[in-house]
Length: 475
Image 1: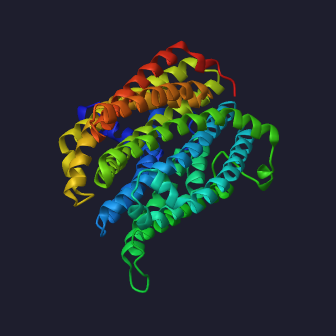
Image 2 (image 1 turned 120 degrees about the horizontal axis):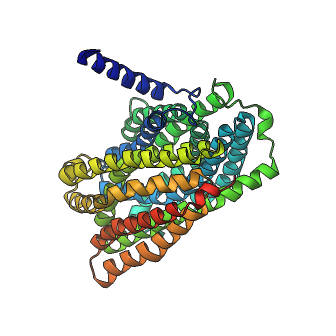
Image 3 (image 1 turned 60 degrees about the horizontal axis):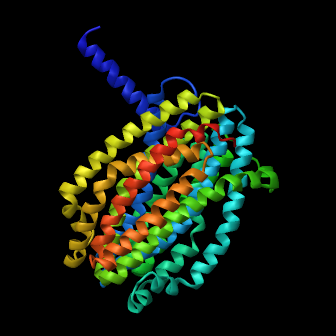
C-alpha cells in the first residue's frame, strides 16, 4: 500500500469515527474493542455537550456586559450562577448516581433495569427541585445581598435571580437526563439537547434583552427568560427521545411509578454525590462573597467574568472526563477491571493534553478574551489577573476531573466527597480567607488559593485511586 493510500485510509477511519461519535451509536460495545475508540466515541459528544452548557453563561455575559450599569448586571449574573451551582450540585450528584447505575446495568446486559433506574432518578430530582425553586424565587433579593451584592445591585438584578432559580427544574432535568443517556452510552443525544437549548438561547437573548418589533426590551431580566426557555426546549427534546427514541433505553409510563427500593438504592449513591458537589459549590459561593466584600462591585464583576470564561474551558474537560465514568461503570458491570483501569489512563492522558493547551491560550491571550465580554476597564483589569492566576492549575484540574468521574462512575461516591470536604472547606476556604484578609491581598489572595487547593485535591485523588477501593464497589 502506498503512502498516499495509507494516509487516505487513516483519514477515512478518523472521519468515520467522528461521524459515529456525533451521530451516536449505541450498538458499539464499550466493554470490548479499542479503548481509544471507546473514549473518542464518548468524549467527543460529551466535550461538545459541556461546551454548550458553558456557552449559556458566556452568551448571557456578553449581552448583559454591554448594558447600562454593566457592572451591576455582570455581578448579578455571576452571583446568581454561583448560587445556582447548588442546583447544579444536586443535579450532577443525582445524575452521577443515574449514570453509575444505568452504565452498570447496561454492562450487565439488562436495559430494562437501566431504564427503570433512570426514571426513578427523575422522580427524586423533581421532588427535590420543587422546594429549591420556591425558596429561591421568594428570597432572590436577599440571596444577592447575602452573596455580597450592594443593595442597589440587588434591586437592579433580583428579577433575573428569581427567574433563573425559579426555573431551575429545567437545569436539573437537563443534567440528569443527559446523565441517563451517557450511562447508556448514547452521549450524542445528550450533546444534541444542549445544542438545541443553546441555539434557542442565542436567538432569544438579543430579542428579549434588547427588544425586537412588538417584543419589549426586558434588559437583564430578558437574559434569564431566554436561558430558561432555551433549557426547557432542550428538556422537551430529551423527553421525546426517552419515549420515542430508537436507543437501547425503552421508556414506558409504568417506569414512573415510584419504586421505593430502587429510590433508596439511588439515594444511597446520590447522597454523597450531591454532598461532594454541594461542598465544592458552597466553597465557590464563599469565594465569590469574599471577593465581593474585599473587591467591591468591580472586583466581584471582574472575578465573575474570569470565572465564566474559565468554566467555558473547564466544562469541556469535564465532558471528556465523563467518558471515564461511563467506561468504568460498564466495564465493572462486565467484570473487566483491567479494561476499566486502562480507560481511566487513556481519558486522563487526553484531558491533560487538552488542559495544557487551554492553559497556554489563557496565559497568552487572556486580556484579549476578557475584552470581548466587557468594556469596563476596572472590570477588565481584575478579570485578566483572575483568569491568568487560576489557569496555572489547569493541568491538575484535568487529572482531578477524571479521577472524580472514575470514583463516581464506579459508584464510590464517598471517596470524592471526603476529598472535596478536606480540599475545599479545610484547605481552600481558610487559605483564601487568610490571604485576602490577614495578608490584605484582597481578591488576589482568593485567586491564588484556587489553583493551590485544586492541585492538593488532585494529589489526594491520585493516592486514593491507587488504593483501588473503587474497583470493589457494588451498585
